[in-house]
Length: 534
Image (cartoon, rainbow, N blue to C red; front, side, top):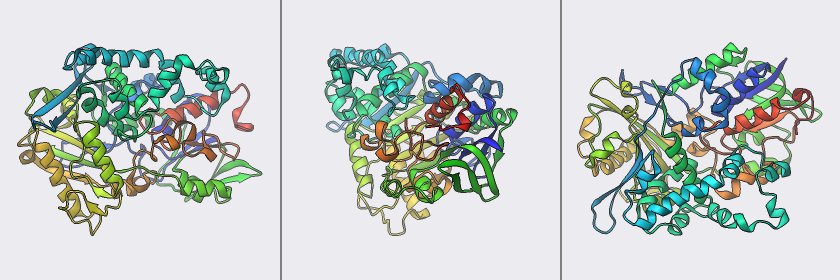
């Protein structure tokens, strides 16, 4: 008999399994794939000697989170190393919409150095004020990411009890800003274009667009995270992160079942008893399900209440994403040489071009001018490619799962994401990159394209090719993630917990939901595995 069975092996599962095992629990980790890690993986996807992070790559949310505080030392003992920068951390480049001249917004680790580059003196001070405002409310903001927001006790601890007592005025301006879209938040604070161009594209990494609510808190959170923690990548590739976790799990007696499909979550009299898998029954008093809401309530729980199954079917996934890996004969040489040493560059003029591309993708169209995330991991970790050569990690977060047309009117989508369409869209992407780094296309030795349909095939949690576990718009985020009828991590089945990107605090590599649930289970005064865990 296991104390805990964990379904899936993404970041939240790895964190929860490790924390529970360190607390002395008998844990079984069950993974459908033949490897651990979910969207954490790396390998020679193009040519021998070129190491690419297949999906996710950057770890500022992990190293700044509670899971790392608990597990970091154990992982480093088992070989985890990070590469980071103390200088320029991220940038965005675009053509000026009026003059056509290239303009670059650049963020350094030092906020003051970043602000000095802004044209308007008022914007320089406004930028530092933005970070100071977040700092004053950091306990509430970051505390909310690690709290069960449906708990009145937790809300009071975070300071939201003021809402009930009528003492909300002091925090009203901050709360108002927090629920604004990123575009409106920036318009309310800045006169120039720099902050918009620099940080609006980062909202895509939170599963948002520049015109969606809560950008007003996520945008400064992104900025503060990178100013404080940089953009660390795993030395030698993301697979070494997973290897460190696997070593930690095995050292602490975790049973790992790879290539095993969970087909049903079992319960008796409303309490979980284990799971039925393709390899037989795994008994457990507690089950953590890192699955999509659709899978949990319409497949794994055949007797789920009808209102939950119906709500799960109506759960809305976000835009699809595409990942492109390139092996280059030499590193990218940008027209602005400062970008040669920046780990991650967005090609976007901010909320305008990114907002248009988001709207086109959500309408089922291939964006005419997509936002391009250009990851230059070799800037931080040069041994990911043979000497003198480089890898390039391109991410496109505004693509439809089932394209119905092309916003530019150039590409046929009749066959869906065929190899022909993949190559044609890559040609568009590289053409956009060439505007700012001419000659790059000629240095491409090999490419590997992962379309939204490929993401969904690789990871069943990426429903509709959405790697963020569902739209993170306000109506299904925070208090309402994944949906009001099942908000929070505990479920209607005693001992069954829902974790993963589709649960609070949402997408990203923080391991937040796995850490939150593990902490709740391991801090109970009595044995949490033999009682009602709600």
